[in-house]
Image (cartoon, rainbow, N blue to C red):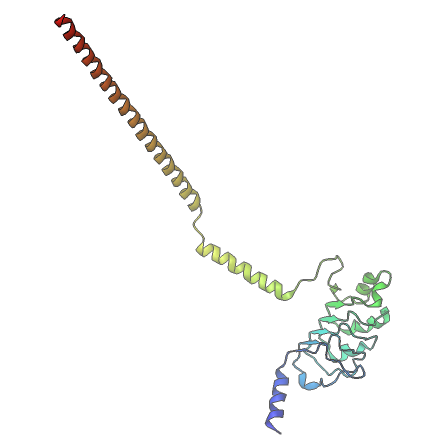
Length: 236
C-alpha cells in the first residue's frame, strides 16, 4: 500500500466532522462517503441536490445529520439502519409531504430534535401535535418543544455555566470585603466636612482681625483729632 493512501486512510478514520454543503452530487445519490468515515459524529450535506439516502454508509457514531435544502421525499428508513444513534436530524427544505414518510423515524430511538422547516408537511392541520404524537421520543420539533420553549444550544449552555462559575470565583477572590466601600465613603465625607469647617474658621478669624484693626485705627484717629483741638484752644 502506498504511503499516501495509508495516510489518507488514517486521516479518514479520525475525522469526526464532515461538511459537504453545496457540493453537488450526481443523480441525487451520495458519492465518495464510505465506511472509512466510521468515526463521524457530525455530517452536513445541505443543498447538494440529494434525493436518495440509499448510499449512506454505516455511521454508528453519527449524532447530528444536516440534510436541509435537498429534494428528499422518502426513504428515511435507511437512517435507523445506518445511523441508529442520531440525536439531531435536519430535513428542512425537502419534499416531505405526509406523516407516513416521517413515520419511518420512529426507529431512531435516540432522536431528540427534528427540523422540518419549509417542508409541505408543515401545512397539515395540527402538524406539530401529530408529529409529537407520532415520534414520542423527540423533545424538539423545528427548534421548540411542545410548550413552545426554544431548544437550548448545548455548547452555549456549557460556556455560560463555565463563565458563571469563573465570575463567582473571581468576585469572591478579588472583590473588596463587605462594608469596605461604605466605610471609605463615610471617611471621605468626614474629611470634607472638617476641611469645610477649618476653611470657615479661618475666614471668620480673618474677618475678626480686620475688624479689630479698623477699630484701633479709628481710635487713634479720634485721639489725634482730640489732641489737635486741645492745642488750638490753649493757643487762643
